Picture 1: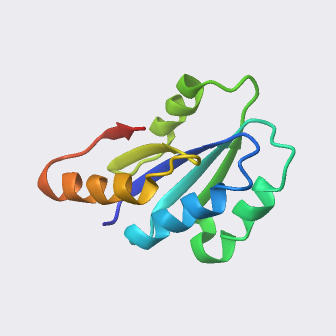
Picture 2 (picture 1 turned 45 degrees about the vertical axis):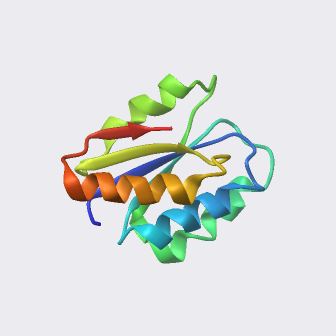
Length: 115
């Protein structure tokens, strides 16, 4: 599936964020991945940067203060892509979620799906 932007919220999610990004890459062809970071102090942004050679300009990092889910969702609309999804890097069912997203997208138009 092309033309999807995935927003991943991050606040010191070094243990999970690599898995979240890789899961997205496993299911989507050339997705745009937008990381909304809230002043992380762990190694999560270094882990995200390891995906730059694969994603190139399709990897965006937006730094915000005073994180809230609503603030990260507002950034959903910065992408010109047809489909947008926002996920939490701690989502233990991320592969199930993405698989369901793909099934849904194949059957109907998609604007925003949030978990």
